[in-house]
Length: 112
Image 1 (tube, rainbow, N blue to C red):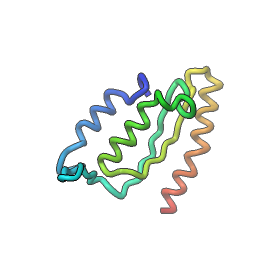
Image 2 (cartoon, rainbow, N blue to C red):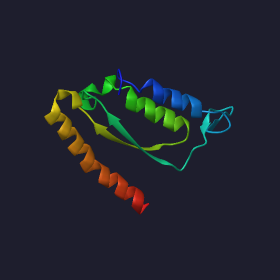
Image 3 (cartoon, rainbow, N blue to C red):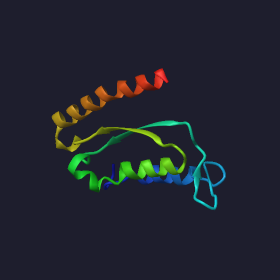
Image 4 (cartoon, helix red, strand yellow):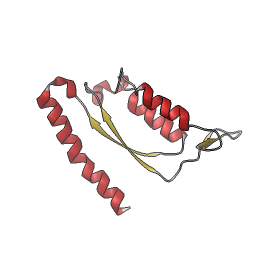
């Protein structure tokens, strides 16, 4: 997370892959994502804590869910690494929580 959102590099990457007729199409009703049947795991890292009561100022994860959904990827899981700016102990704790969550997601992918 950079300034509550995605980095300009990641935004630029999405700008380059969002192509009408290739990754989405237009219809009279609405755009339709063409990248379907994919499961996405987002690893979101932030110095602060933006889940829970601070979720209103997290523009990163909602934006990623929106752009991925626009492209057709709606099965999105998020692993959060939060509070890394609160010192080494907090950063280690955040990594421990994320590491504990990751095997469940990877196991589900392997089983699928």
